[in-house]
Image (cartoon, rainbow, N blue to C red; front, side):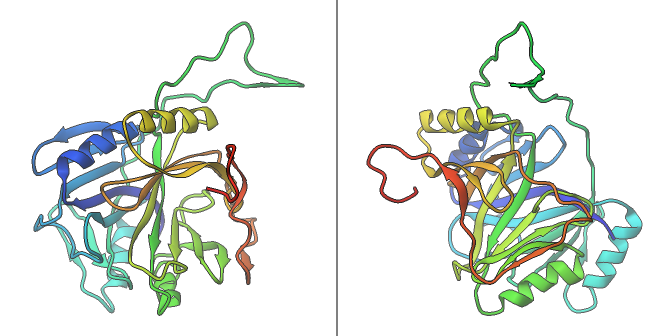
Length: 303
């Protein structure tokens, strides 16, 4: 019953036009846009959907204002999709639409969808790099990205209530067969879906003791694109919410922006991959958040 990746993220928003402009500036490919909503695509055929908050097709709100209303997960085979639907139907309401998309809600009330994965391969090769003893790029310079063009949606991070957070985690671990990679007792659990080796595809964070999306992360090529994508966002007037750095758990380079659609978005690159040989870790105390973070004159604490 293999879940392979995030297939789509659907927002319910108060201001469709503003959120459409934001996702365009993030660098996603517009598929369609109008007064009632917009759809964006990644190069590997994932989708970000923007709908009016009162759209009748959306799952109920988990919190006030604009927010993610559903994350859809891509499943490898029809047999696996049917098995997951049957498993979830044992103790909760499950619907299946005309396109075969299975819908339900998790322990926190968040919309969860399951559908057949529709992957395409990204055709954009990584940049060649140089360092002493390892030369890939000869007789040519580096050209700027100018802005980010995300490769894929790499993970979702939900805030959950402290009360019941273990049950919230167990839904994904036991029912959807995610694997806990890093369990941080005071903070949350980083989980990997069964069909991927990314450090995490999902984070449930109970440290905030709140409901709503924390962030959606978009993978870009490298640290240059993280920096340039963030610079472009600032030039368009968007607010940076976490300055450039490199995480400890996951090791990914990051830069984050407040999203009018709810929560934040993260530009991420160079994340750890953990295969079946990796031994999951349990932390009784919260480890250091980052390995490094950009500092500027006048900083006394990390931004």
